[in-house]
Length: 172
Ligand code: GNR
Ligand code: NI
Image 1 (spheres, rainbow, N blue to C red):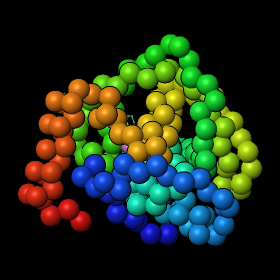
Image 2 (tube, rainbow, N blue to C red):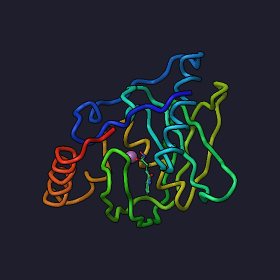
Image 3 (spheres, rainbow, N blue to C red):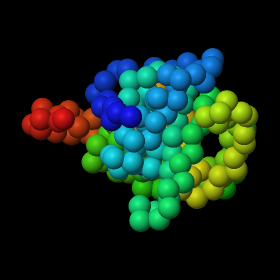
Image 4 (cartoon, rainbow, N blue to C red):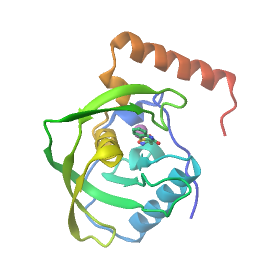
C-alpha cells in the first residue's frame, strides 16, 4: 500500500469527468487500498479517485468517529438513484481545497447504486453526514467541487488563497 499525493483545485485535472471502471481487477484493488490509506492518513471522511489523479469512477468514504471502529465504504461506478426533497446544511471541506470550509445545502438523504470491491452490485440508503459525503464524492467524479455551490466571489477568493498558500508553503 502506498500513500498517493492529493491534487488541489489549482490542477485542471480535477475538472474532468471520470470514466466508469470496466473491470475490478488487481490494479483497481491496489488503487482502493492506496485511496483508503491516503484518506485515513489525511485525515478525511471521503476520497474520489480523481483526487489522486486517477480519472475513474471510484470513491471511498468512512464517516465513523476517529476514535471509533473503522467503517469504510468502497463504491465503484456509483449512481444516485434518488435524493430526498428535504435538505441538510453541512460545513464542508475538501482535501483538494485545503483549509477552507463553507456551508453547502444538499438533499438530506440519497439512495446510491454501485459495485462493491468484489464487483457485486449493491445499494445504500444514506442520511446525515454519509449522504452529504457521498454526494460530495460523486460530484468529484463529474468534475464538481463544493466551492462551485458558493458565489463566484467566495469561490475565487478561496482559489486565490489556496494558490497563495501553495506558493508560500513547500507542500510534500
Ligand atoms: O474530509 C472531508 N470532509 C468533508 C466534510 C464535509 C463534507 C464533505 C467532506 S469530504 C472531505 C474529503 C474530500 O475532499 N473528499 O472528496
Ligand atoms: Ni473533496
